[in-house]
Image (cartoon, chains in turn cyan, red):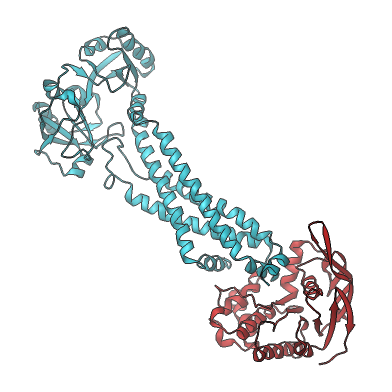
Length: 383
Length: 229
């Protein structure tokens, strides 16, 4: 403890340099925590996916649609309990930057399939009874201030849905009862979109409820076999795989974000290590004097390494604090793709461990340099 | 009884493949309570001799005994511990830590002891009092004159009450008045506190303050003067 004062005094020697080092670690830790939060948010949906729901898309890509006639065929496959469908609408609310998920769904079937969409019976009826009605996730409602009864106009984003704007009435604000359903989306009647669509009777994906999760592989195979060699071949997968593939429309996010986080951390490590090494080089005489006074090599090592650790830890705590404040749905609009964005406790611990790791590694070489200093050579260099 | 005993101490440095001799079979005996001045031209080996006595350098051959300890055989770790207990070193350029106050600079060697905070404080204030800087404890080195800095450095050297004080050109960077004050202080430490001192100097006036002076030339002891003080 008595050496802590020395470490603090050394860190304050060049305030600007210390501040810059602390800030570089803080930014690295912030980016790491933020990127981890985004990845975790993406993966949360997949983690919470139901094992009794399977999703069927076009074998070519989720971007292509398939006929509504598939519905009856899937329903008749043994082991299938229920089937519903949805399409990605991709409309524009006032400005393209106001991005959120809009799904044209089979209202009754979809609400039956996803009990995680929490509505009161009154809200449910109001939505089902209004062909141009929509339901809005509470997170999305908070972001844009939507209230029940509000009129919402969406411009067409995907040309097959025609050219005229779509008007909706908010019939309910739904709450999410599980991570499989986010609270940042808008859902409305598929028929409303289909009426104006240039390609009638087209569906983005089917969701099938199966009775027994153990039968999932056979049922998925059976669905795809039904449409094999047709113009609309399908690819059926578990809900988890579907959630993942939905995200993968943006590329391999895990790899991309992971690589960015890693690059930032490694760069910061080099910056911090270089700063520490510079600081030790400047203090060669002082270290030699301390060694002359009888400070053992091990103590010198700990003093220098402790300084790196202190700066990195302070930077880490700062970075985590900023990430905690900024990375949440109030600040970040992820358009419904990240249902539960936020820095969780695991990420806090990992980020803190990371900053400690940066501190230890950055201090390792300078501390070794300092502890192995030859006293006579160091004193002679200055004298 | 002799406090310091050097027997046939030889020191040579290696520069690439060439061996440069600095000290050649030097033997010295220094009794306890002595104030020894070491003089000689640049490169004569006097600072090297001081470094060997301080245990911050090792002889190529020969033996160095200080008190009961044969220091030339100690490990690095043991040597560091020995230095902290037995050596007070005064540098030509004071070598105070600029980010520490006078108090903290003097306290530095005490951090290696088991003394409590209060005991450390008492020791530091005593040492600063001896060098006449009791009122400068909160000053940083940049706020002190050269003479005051050197006196803080002397306080740092004596705060652990070491067996031996080693001074490497302690007045080399000071004006005449400050140099005289520092030398008077060293004489006082030797006379009043019975500290054994070995001082390297170029300055004949400084050497006059020592009890006896030895001359080194090309690594060899060439002349020994009788006590002058």
